[in-house]
Image 1: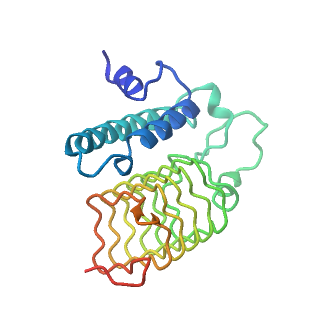
Image 2: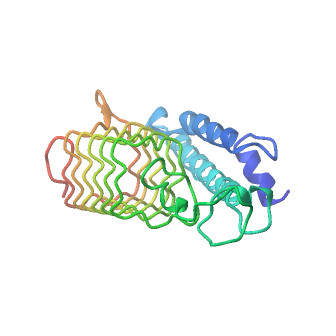
Length: 234
């Protein structure tokens, strides 16, 4: 079995499944295997859930990177009619060279060329289900933005304004969120495993349902962070 076939099998999909099917399978499996749904005293199942989530995250990460890479491709491909950031001669139906500069101001579309989005204004933007992995969004304005189910693996959000943002089920594995403003943000179901949250402000952020913690913080660095109740994490 090839690596690609193994990734599809982990997500319980047939080879060649669409990006939408990959996203949905990922959400379904994370819901099933999230450690918060398993009794904390059942160490065997907790470990199994951790292993499953690691494999699920890796499979979606690999499949999404492959599929996104084949959309704005650099080879001669039918999809090349979409605007690119190169100055490549192409049919006359693309007469406006400056157009590639517009997406960050309107609706962000995943592109391997738009890696540096530092300081951009995405306040109240709908970025749900986008792939922002590896992007530089340091000091960006994402206040009130919809980031539900957004894939943000290793994203740089240092100093970013995420106040009142909806991060429901967002994947923020290994994200740099130092000094980020997360005041009143919705973090229910978010995965912040390994994220750097030193000095972040989480005052009033939603992370619990009753006494149950619904945010994954395995390996996260919370030193000096202001917690939802206003206390400073030591």
